[in-house]
Amino acid sequence: MHSARAVHTAPGHQEHGDLLICRGKVSRACPHDPVAVDAGGLLVAPGLVDIHVHGAAGHDLADPDPAGWHTVLDTHLSAGTTTVLATLASTTPDRTAAALATAAALMRTPHAPTLAGVHLEGPCLAPDQRGAHDISLLRSPQQVLAELTPLPEALRMVTLAPELPGADALITYLTQHRVTVSAGHSAATGHDLARARSRGLSHLAHLWSGQSALTRPALHRVPGLLEESLASQTLTAEVIADGHHLPAALLTIALRCLGPDRLCLVSDATAGCGLDTGRTFHTGASLGRVHDGYAATADHTSLCGSITPLATCMSRMRDMTAAPLADVLTMATATPARAAGLYPRKGSLLPGADGDAVLIDPDLHVRAVVLGGHPQTGSPRTAR
Image (cartoon, rainbow, N blue to C red; front, side, top):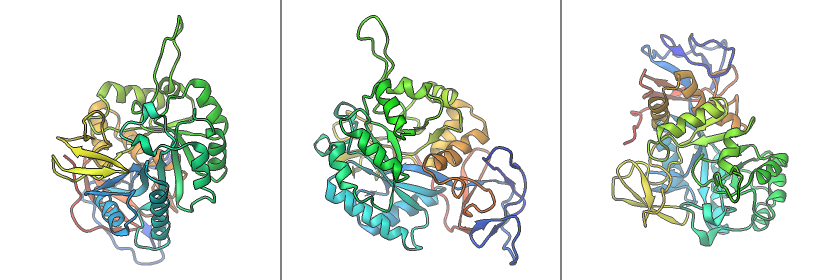
């Protein structure tokens, strides 16, 4: 590529220059004749990394149909997301196993290059913090430990409530197998979180969504999972910057507390992403309905994921917080890649990284997508 400004999100590396991709990898030199792509003065950034994606275009990733998975992955790729953790909402053991098998089969082929693994959001969640998850499908850590033994090869992240009985053993098992463990949909105390961290928990799902908060049971105030998350020194955490989950003040607080190297932008996009207002869809076993810019459960008592791709969350994060360009890009690339154990192969433009990139304009709109060094055809999709 030439005539472009390449934005590198790794500290200490150049922020300007041409990007050379050789045989699908970012390279300093290429013995073959490279194909030049004129970026027309656009910014070149790493392909976006979304570690919390449930679906798109009417398809839910809890459905094991490979054709639906391809539709979801292609929809998000067209919007600039070149790396996806397929996120499964709480569903039955059989459907979870089937979806994990679909992921493993797709990852063994060259036909799903954006799929980096599976993120189980549930079913080990606190009933009172379950959000849109179906309460009848929540299960104990002991049950899930049995379901995940032996470890499914596609599993990369699990979100759970660390205060549940038996969670310690499940967290230890997962982290010993290099699966990222995330606290979410949880009523955990500071003690619960500290115990889970000692066993390897390193991440927090969507801040302010499904988290216990400050209480005052007597004279003294007791921090909840939210405050403990914001006060932590090492944990990474997610925010959904779709303009509906969190107002600007809360996004600003999260960024000030954690900084761009620990705060991840995620879409939490559901099957409602790309559907018209009024359409219904499933996420796991829950029914959602698309409204004007957001999705809610059928009874309208809880938000039901989002209908917004990561690229749109990225631009809204900058609009709502005035965060610098480099920080917003870091939150949508390098930081989620690190949280999922994928960096620097994903989320960077360092030599040896996969040749995934997006070309963006000054307003952070994705204008073109490159996957493995190959420009993708079709216009990038934007969200409502």
